[in-house]
Every structure is written in structure tokens, then in C-alpha cells.
Amino acid sequence: MPDVFADLVGQDEAVTTLRQAAAAAALLLDRVDASEQVEQPPGATAAMTHAWIFTGPPGSGRSVAARAFAAALQCRTGTGCGACAGCHTTLSGTHADVRFVVPEGLSISVTEIRTLVLRAASTPAGGRWQAVVIEDADRLTEAAGNALLKAIEEPPPRTVFLLCTPSTHPDDISVTIRSRCRVVPLRQPPAAAVAAVLTARDGVPAELAGWAAAAAQGHVGRARRLARDAEARKRRDAVLAVPRRLTGVGACFDAASALIEAAEAEAVASVADLDAGERTALETALGAGGTGRGAAGAFRGAAGQLKELEKRQRSRATRAQRDALDRALVDLAGFYRDALTVAMGAPVPAVHTDVAELARTAGQRWTPEATLRRLEAVLACRSAIEANVKPRIAVESMMLALWRG
Image 1: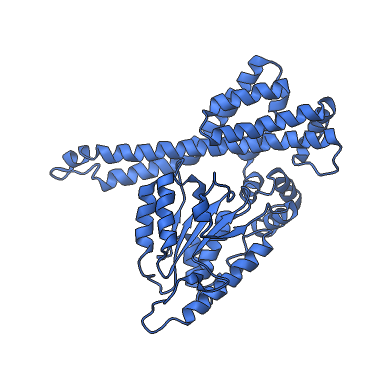
Image 2: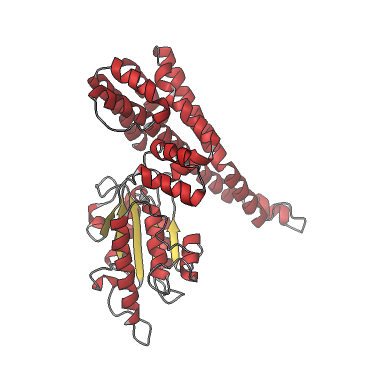
């Protein structure tokens, strides 16, 4: 059976660091006295500390690394064997001493962090570590970051904080939090490594795996989606057809509308079942459909809770739409990157091998400067949306820039 780090593709240095830290953490527990209390924080050892930041580009495996490390900390052997109950329950998200924050909306609130920190301060039920894994910690609000900072500055003896961010830039994580954490940098996995994983673990044919790995630009999850999901491949094809559609101002606005509508449809489809299940569960818990005395009146009084649920679901839908749109923009950036390599005569392989001829034609027709401006327009659109510019406005502006060159 593979160990907990088996899904961390192409990150040998990071895996070595995390294995050493897990071993040091296990050694620290071996020195615990009879009262089961650690006399000093985990940071007392060279390899282990109480707060970590996992950084890297999308698809590099930040959350995978954090979850695997949390499992290794709970492993009875201290190695992350993948076979014991501690490993299994952590990886499945059911371990009593491991808490995950996976933001569904645009930000992580201070209330959520305060509640989490309070629960994490308790003694581990399993006698090992309390682990707090915060995915997308760059979405912490300022108040939430301050609440987390206080907990990191004064950590409980057996609590470990694992944060995942794109980088350690102040725009992603505050400098004060960064200064109190150990950083584990992850890199974009090589396409060959991603393809090998798809073939070995998912049974994807080698040719399809190689294409999906290249098209996903090292993003393991997206490569798996492209290899398995025909609808995902159709959406990608529609995005890569955009450069051919930009024949005038009207066409630019039509292309922008099509891209936005496709992202909205994908987002609705991705959250529809979850939304329906949450609403049904809440209505049942509040007594919907009950026939007992006072049941109908009690349900009518629960309107506030239903509105709060709808608010969370709208926030999640917005996040899902932006994520879907960002995936489309990454594909589009890959096309212009391929065209730029042609324009510059760079001897590097294409990202989108199936439209390489189209990219070659574009690269030969456009000047390198014009191609670079188009690539920068796509990247600027991504940044604008991340900065909360209305997606439609940002995409329309991008389309006009792509047409003008």
C-alpha cells in the first residue's frame, strides 16, 4: 500500500523535508512524560515546528502536501505509512484531531477562524497532535489573519498549523504570519511525472495521459479531469477557439459573453447537487414536512437560517464561477504562450499540442511584441478578477485587447 506522500507528484525535496519533520514529531512524542503533556512547543526540534506554509503554483499539490503531512503526524509509526487508522482517517477527512478549512466562498471569516482556533486548543483525542489545515489561506480576511496570528504566536503544546498559499508575498499571506512559519515551496510537476501518475493510478492510456498532462500545464487535478471528462475537453476546445472568433468589436463582446456563460453553467452544474442536499438536510432538521403540533410554526420561524444557507451558497457559486473562468483563462494563456514561442523561435514543446498548428500560424503572423501583449492581456484579466473586478467587464476588456494586439 502506498504511503501518504504517494500523491505528491514531482516534489521529492518537499517530501524529504516533511518525512524528517514527521519523524522528529514522533520522537518528540516518545519523550512525553507520564502526564501526557509536552513541556515545550513542537518547535523545539530542528526538523519540526508548530506552523507551516505550503506554497506553489496552482496544481502543485499544496493541499495534498498539507493533508499528507497531517496524516504523517497522526501515523502510529511516525512515517505516514498509509495503512494505519491515523493515516486513513486523516486522508479521508474524518480524523477527530485534524480540522480542515476549505473556503467555499470568496474569503475566510474571522468567526470561522476563532471557532477553529478554540477547538484546536483542546487536548488531542488520539494522544498525538491537533492539526489545523487551512487551504487557500490567502483568502483570510484581515481580521481572520490577526486571529490566526495570535494562535500561531502562542500555540498550544500539541497543535500544528498548516497553511496553503500561492506564495509568501504580502498579498497572499501577512508578513507577520510568514515570519512565524516554516515554508515548504512546491514546484510545478513535470508533465511526464503527471502523465505517469495518470497511467499508473487512474488507468489512463499513455497517449491520452501525455496530452492531458501537457494541456493542464502540470496541474494534476486538471489533467485528471481532462483525461476522464469529455465535457471538460469540449469546454477547453471552445476556449481555444476564441482567437479565431475575434474578427471585430462585436465578435469580441460575443466571445466574452460566451466565455462568461460557459463558466456560469459549469459553476451551476458543479454545485447544484451539493446545494440541493444542504437545503434538504436543513429543512429536515428544522422540521419541514412535520405533522406534529407546532411543527409548521417552528419551520416558518426558521426563515433566517434558510437565508443564511442561501447566502453561503451564493458565495460558493460565485467562487465556483470564478474558478471555472480562471481555468479557461489559463488555457487561453497557454495558447498565446505557444504562439509566443513560435514568434521567438524558442525550442520548447507546446502546451496545447492539438492546436499547435493554429498557434504556429498565429505566431508567424503576429510580431513577438503583439503576441506578448496578448498574453499579458490574459494574465491581466486573471489578476483583475482576483482583485474583484466584475468578471464580465474584465473579460470584455481582455477580448478587445486580444483583437487589437
